[in-house]
Each structure stands twice: as C-alpha cells, then as structure tokens.
Image (tube, rainbow, N blue to C red; front, side):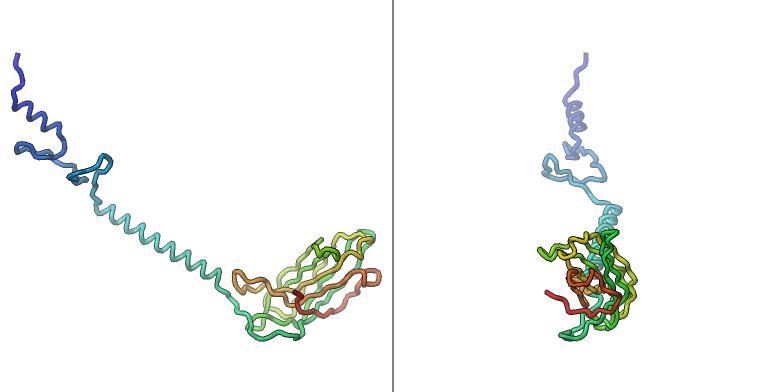
Length: 227
C-alpha cells in the first residue's frame, strides 16, 4: 500500500484553500465579478460593478430626479392662485340682485324655492369676471343649524348668470316660524388652493315674516356677506 507523500498533501491543501492566496508559488484564479478583500467580514463580499450596472444606477438616479421635479411642478400648479383677487375696496358697493320666488305647499309639506337669475354682480377678480353659483339653506332660527341645503350649477364668466333652478325643501306648515331661508351667491373661480369661495352677496329671509309664507317672483337685492 502506498501512502501520500508530503508534496501531494500540500497540493491538495492549496486546491481546497480557494482564496486565491499564493502558497509556495501557486495561486488560485479569482472569480471575475469579485475583488479580493484583504480582511472581509463574514457578510462583506466586495463586488465590482460592471458597466451595465453603472448605467442602470445612473438611469434610476435621473428618473428619480425627474419624478421629484414633476411632483414639485404639479404642486406648484395646485397651490398657485390662477386668478388674483382685486385689491379694490368693496365697501358698500351694490352687490347686484337675485331673481327668485318662495311658496309653501301644504299638500306636499315642502318649501318651494325658485332661483332664476342674478344680475349686476360685483366680482372679486381683477379681470372683472366671476363663475357664480347659488346655495339655498333652510336654517333653524333657534340654534342656526342648517336643516336642508341645495346648490345651483356654476355659470362660467358671467356677472348676469341664468340659473333657472327649482328646489323643494321638506318643511311642515307648523314649523315655518322656526326657520329662515338663506341664499348665498358665491364665486367658484380658483383664487388658490386654500382660498374660500368668496361670497358675492347674500339674502336672509325669516319665513314667518312672509304673508302665507309666499314671496312672488321678483328681483331681491343682494347684501354684503355677514360675518
């Protein structure tokens, strides 16, 4: 029986080493995608980035910058006021008029409100135009709580809008004296993301003051907004 001599044992040891270290003049080839770290930690293999990897990272960086820039641009458009408000003092200037009517239907137990048109509105914008609409609210006299609310459509770029809306609000005849009707004409123009819709004028009517809870169709003057 033959036993392995010393030189055979040394060569086998060098082949099992696998770290690419020179041992007695011999060396083991290192994998092409890795570099040798002289003192690597147990989870710290040092790897090379080839050209393709570098191009991918570069592309991802550019895409990230473009996405961030696009997001900032969109936010700028949202928060930027499209239409600046006029700096003119509105004071006691006339707010215009609203054509409307009110009646109570005992058969239906409803308050019937017509909001037909507005004229000679006083705009907020510097361009002397507005996008008006009207809200109709039935409000408790006792606690100022809104019992019912309706809204017309928006009329673009007009100081004399035609609404032609008919609303029916639930209201028992015996409760008429407990409520008032409030109509606000507002401007839907974009004056900024956090800007409230400005009130162009308002009308408040205590229903108990109307004979038989009826207001024939007529033009009613709009008043300045009450704080």
